[in-house]
Length: 226
Image (cartoon, rainbow, N blue to C red; front, side):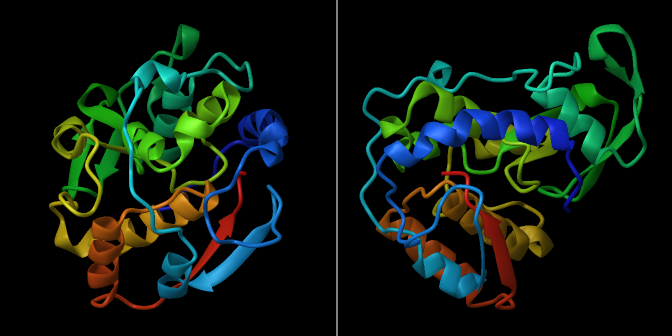
C-alpha cells in the first residue's frame, strides 16, 4: 500500500542528505546522484545490490535519531505515517495527539482500531541497515534514514504484534504472516535497500531470489537517497 507523504517533510529530510555524496556507496548503481531515479524490473533491481558480509559491531539503536519533527509542524515522523496511512483518519489534538481512526496492517492482514495497537516499522530494520552499510554513515544520514518520509515503502504502520515478531530480522528468517503480501514485502525491501545503497548478505540475497521466483517481475522505481 502506497500513500502520499507531505512534500515539506520530504524536503526537510532531503536537506540533511546533501553531504551524502562524500561517503562511500556500497551498492552497484553507477553514476547516479542522490535525488535521481531509476526504474528496473525487480529481479534486475536485486542484482544491483552489493552482496557482502554483515557486521553489527558497535550497533546501538540510539545511533539512528527518531522520531523527529522534520517540517516543524508539531507532528513527529511516527504521527505523519499514522496520518498518511489511516483507512479512517484519526482525530488530531494538541501536540499532534492522535485518537480514534482505523488502520490496515498488511503484515498480518488485519485492521487495527486506534493508534495504540500500531508500531511504525522500518521496513529494513535499523540494525539491518547498520549491518549493511549505515555504520559508515554520518549521524545526519542515519537520522534521515530513520525518518524517511521521502519513499512510502520505507516506513509502514503495522500491528505491534507483527512488528515485534519481525524485530530486526531480514527475509532469511522472517516474512509477513500474510502470504499474499510477501511479494510486495520482498519488492519493497529491495527498493529500500537500493534507495539507500545498502548491501545484502549471501543468505538474504538467496532468500529474496527464491521469493521473487514466485512473484511477478514488476518494475520498481527508486529515487536514490544517497
